[in-house]
Length: 133
Ligand code: AMP
Ligand code: ZN
Image 1 (tube, rainbow, N blue to C red):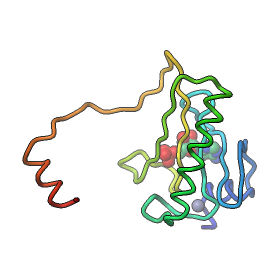
Image 2 (image 1 turned 90 degrees about the vertical axis):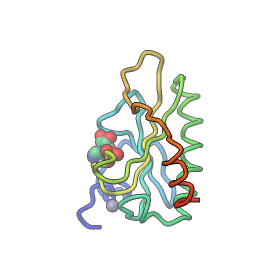
Image 3 (image 1 turned 180 degrees about the vertical axis):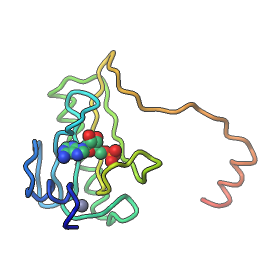
Image 4 (image 1 turned 90 degrees about the horizontal axis):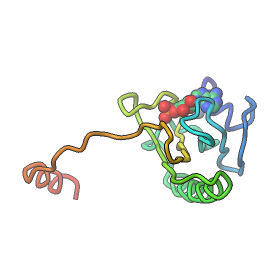
């Protein structure tokens, strides 16, 4: 993808604050951090979203997320950790190259992630079980 900014960053064509790199991924600091240490896992090959991401890379991305979460928690001494991954504009995706947010959480921080819990009715539960199970 010649016009994809995360392709260029992941492959080193645009400089970035890189925390980690291997053959498949680059982990960079987010330029608009939700909290101190907010980082992004970028695959080096282009996939717009989780639907396009090959299974093998999806597996490797989760293993890398676990490793980064462990290291960042140890070093930054954060109190918790969110891993966020948005797909589609409605879900908050603004850069259409798959990425995982690594967001350290600190007591008293101002990070807002969340929703108002609804109610799982019997009807909807049954419908979803029928369609998705
Ligand atoms: P999303 O809304 O899930 O697509 O996340 C996109 C993220 O990329 C946001 O948190 C932005 O702050 C971040 N971002 C956008 N451009 C850059 C860039 N050039 N370098 C680092 N982070 C970026
Ligand atoms: Zn890309």
